[in-house]
Amino acid sequence: SLLKRSAAFKEDACFHIQHTCDSMRSQIRHLKDDIHCTSKELEWILASLVGVALFLIIAPLLGIYINNSEGEYVHWHYFFRDLFNVAFGVMAVAIAIFLTAPLKG
Image (cartoon, rainbow, N blue to C red):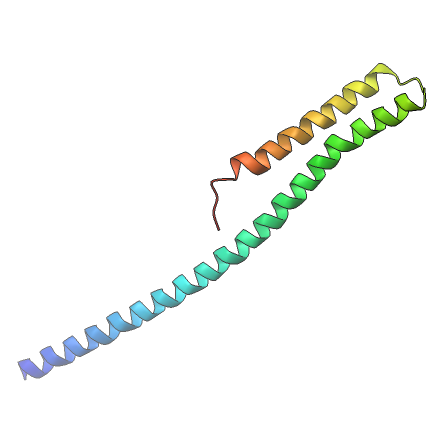
């Protein structure tokens, strides 16, 4: 009787351990899929950030070039605005590229 109970307990324990392992394996697979999807979304977010940052860099410089080539007078405060846009664009590119470079999907 004691041997039968011991065998039944061992069988139940093995079944429980197997069930737990299967459950953990399934959760790890789902986590891996979620990480893969998240890394793709992160790539799109970073690409958008770089695109906007490049626009912030290129647009003011292009505006200054066009205004100077047409001989128009540009008030000095526009240069500060453009300098701010360019600096913010450079900072955004630096953050997007250098600070997120260690992240691997």
